[in-house]
Image (cartoon, rainbow, N blue to C red; front, side, top):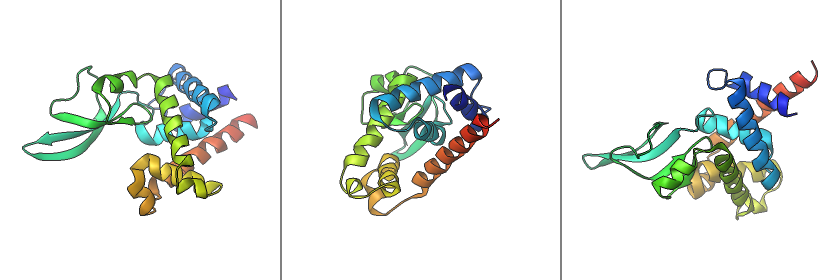
Length: 181
């Protein structure tokens, strides 16, 4: 199955991944899945949506002349962007929040990032109101929380959740295709 997930990842993001990098992502996602029970195909789908598999992805607050806004993109340097401040959302799974900049740098590591993302999603699945929901509704609620916090759950903002689930289903279709060839 590992090889098929690598092929699926390569087909999903041919401009972002080569075979070796795809393997690193699949191994890291599988390790996180083994520890948390979050399906590996879901983790790979989340990483695709969050960062297109780029471990240098960074979302942060930047202020210029008393005007602050959220900025997303790639940040390759070891010092934080000038004028930027937390909350930092770092790496392939865009995890972090109000963490020190050093933690954001640590989260460039694929295994650490996938594991933290999987743990974060698992926590959302167990929180109320998500824990009261069953099956797909529980997952949608948890993804709402992961992608937008409590406010996203309150207003039933499902765009992010359904985008991730759509990518996960695409990965599963690719797996079936490769397994049946």
